[in-house]
Each structure stands twice: as structure tokens, then as C-alpha cells.
Amino acid sequence: MSGLGVGGAELHTLGLRAGVQADDVRTTLVAHGTRRAQAMERRPGAGGAIQLNIRGMSSLRGWWRVWRLLRSERPDLVVAVNQSPLIVAIVARLLGATAARIACIYHTTILRPGDERTQGVFRWAVGRSDALVYVSERQASYWRARGLLSRRDVVIQNGVDLVAFRPDRAARAEMRAGLGIADGDFVIGVVASLWAEKNHLHVVEAVAALQASGVAARAVFVGDGPMRTAIEQRARALGIEARVAMIGDVEDVQPYIAAFDVGVLASVAVETFSLAALECLACGVPMVMSDIGGAAEIVEDGVNGRLLPPGDLPTLVAALSEMAVPAYRARLAAAARGSVERYSVERMLSAYRALFASLGR
Image 1 (cartoon, rainbow, N blue to C red):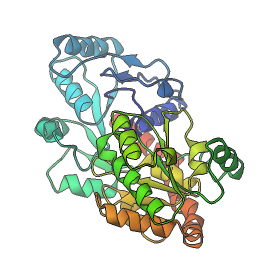
Image 2: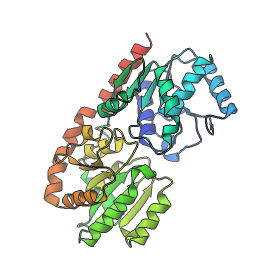
Image 3: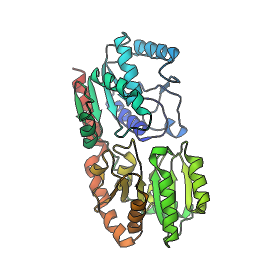
Image 4: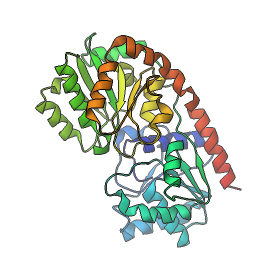
């Protein structure tokens, strides 16, 4: 994987590794880059991670580190998470560093601006991989139509721990009291790293609009990242800084989700099959999501949440205004948990076990 920062792909990778380790399979977790978050280091699946601290694929020293690691570990299977790790793994195999089978788990649908520059090389690497895993049916359709073809591809949708993430009234009351949330406050929660494509700024704008319309709206942002200062500045400029809580990275997001009235992901790129959305719904919290990637596989519009055009602020404000009505919100919340029970982490792990076993034959 690219790094050990906090993000959906990284959390998915740690959960997958922990599940495989439970089967007494020897694994080595390798992070190519320099990103490393303290909140990730103590999570199951993170133990013994090797950080190569490579700064870009042009680093000759980095390539030597990868070569030496593959030669010493002698893996049967390399699982590359997203673009750069797959490119590195395929080139290393072509240079004789390993004879392992190589599978890629791909978590992206709409690319970030600038990511197109490496997409041609990624397409070349995918064509030489032994398996490509999409995490959403819609993502698979999107990329297959654009000629992203491996020797074999499968769809394994992400899974949620339905035991760890569940409705919890006690945690809700405790967290809301701790955050100073009044009984009549409407809490909009976002669990996402503070990257531009996550579009937290639109959520801030929506809170300001709701406040102006008489709704006692608050935002709780769980996560950290390079957009933090810009988000704080926008909230200050709109005069709502007291209504926006910046929590940062945490090891356990469940108590914060319990405090939400609605979860929001207003993403405009990258988002494919959000773990945060699954976790919110499993906790009985309805979702408002941009309709990108596999969002429509998670949220049924008007049933367990709302699906919106990405980047459309007026529609986001309108949807949250609807959600601020307790009776409407309660109807969607009642359907939330049942809607994700088909996406259990056990189902996901079973599918990966079957794939990995078939690649080992």
C-alpha cells in the first residue's frame, strides 16, 4: 500500500490483513510512502508494518528497497492496493525480484485532478496482473467500459463489522453531552480525511445555510488532513465556527457516529464504496451521499438516505433541510441498519479467502 495514513483504503487493508492472519496465514504489510498516522498504528492488522519511506517512483533507492524486500520475503502472493503499489509490484516482478502472483485491489472510480498522468502506466500494470479486485459493481462497469482489463477481475464489495458498529443510545448520549450538543441540535457528521475531494467546504456552507433558515445545525468532522485550515477559515468567515467541531483522527469512530443525526459524504472524486457510509448505516444513522462510485449500492434514495449529484450545494442544503425534520429522519434511520446487513465483514473476508486460494493454485 502507499502509506499508513487514515483513509478507507488503508482501513480496508488492515481489516483484510487481520482477517487473513486469523487463518494462520503469514503476511507482511508494506507501506511504500512516508504517511503514517498514530491512529492507525494500534489497529488490528497494523502490527509489524514495514515503512519504506519512498518519495516517489523515481527514487532509485526506493526501487532497491522494494527489490531487496521481495527477495527476502519470497511471497507467494502480492496484494497491491491501488495504482502506485501495483505499478511497483509489476515492474519488480518483470525485473526478477519475485515470481509471486500479483493481485490489485482498486478503490477509485472518479480520479483526482492530475491522477490521469499515471493512469496509462496503471492500465499497463493491470494488464500484467493476475487479478484485479473492484470494490463496487458500478466501479467495475465504469472501468471495464474504459478498457481497464486484467487477466481476471472480480467484484468484492467492502464489508462492515456489524458487531462493532451498531445503534448505541448510551454512547450517543455521552458523546453529545461531551461535545456540548443541545437536545434540539441537528448534528451533521462526516467521517473522512480532510482532502479536497471529500468536499467538506460544501458541508460547512450547508450548515451556514441551515442556520440562516432557523435550523440549529452543527457539523462534526472526524478526520484530519491538508484541508483543515481552509475548513476552519471558511467556518470562521461564515460566523459558524462554534457550530463546527473538528475532531481529528481517532482510533474508534463509533462513539462519534452514535452522536450523529445524519452522516454526509459530499465527495466529488475517488469515493467508491465508503466504509464510513457502511459504518454510519450500521449504527442506525441515515446517509446523504454524492452519487458517485458505488454510492447507489449503499444508499437507496428516500429509503435509508439521500443520493445527490456531486458538487451541487443547493441540492445538499435541500436534502439536509428534509433530514432536519425528525419524523422524516426517523423513517430513514429505521431502515439504515437492515440495509447494510448484506455487507458484513465476514462475507467480504470469505470472498477474499476464495480469491487468494484460487490464485495460489
